[in-house]
Image (cartoon, rainbow, N blue to C red; front, side, top):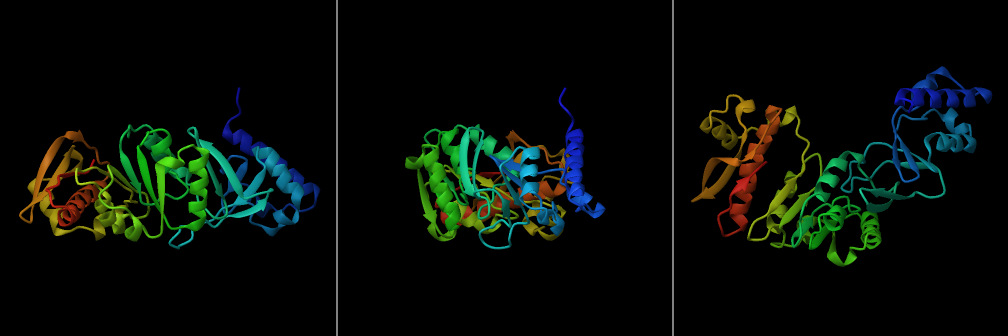
Length: 328
């Protein structure tokens, strides 16, 4: 019978306390700094910023980190922090034990390598990485506006079998990792990297699908995403952190008119996607019963409506033909 996570945590905690007590370094206030959760990438252990924060831990020397590696089955220890508020979303990570900061990690049969101190790897987008891998993109061209080290670019090529990916990235260290990852996965000949601000370097009118993988908001990049779509149409993957603040700040007359048109006094009763197109500078809305939607929160529905007419407006200004926009 496998021990529960709680049992394993208690065992690790007791071992570390014993280790520190034997060296006369234990203080009760350090108890909360023994982490209950961590991330593991290859042989690298990444602990949260609050873990082992007291200087007494580091004063215990290399033997402590060796013990931690043994307990957590790793070879290197890094302490994380919040993502820096810069254009590159640089991680605040320090390698405190181990021979190298270079990580080698396999996720869903895709090989990734990166410098843990220079580049982020979000465990939170694992579902999206795997979802992309389940797509069928044979014969399709993809534009990835925020390629990073290849979080989505690689699943498109390795599993979804995309014909070609145009990958935009402005972080030099991420580009270096992306090049290595394309080579390691044998798909370098199916990807072109565009270095710089995607609003300036992204190709136009080539894509069947466009990934806009930036949070908390991707709205500043909807224009370039629409410009990247081919004239025959395609799919935009819009990433956004939608909170209750969206509903209170971002209502607009167009969104309100849509609610009135469809008598949406209860968003929970609305289960069909909305279709929007513009003719003669007039928004035309219809319920699109081909796609069923379920919004658990009102702000999710509000964002879907807002995205639908915003994207429709952008497409109307940059493409000559009439576009139908559906958010699902």
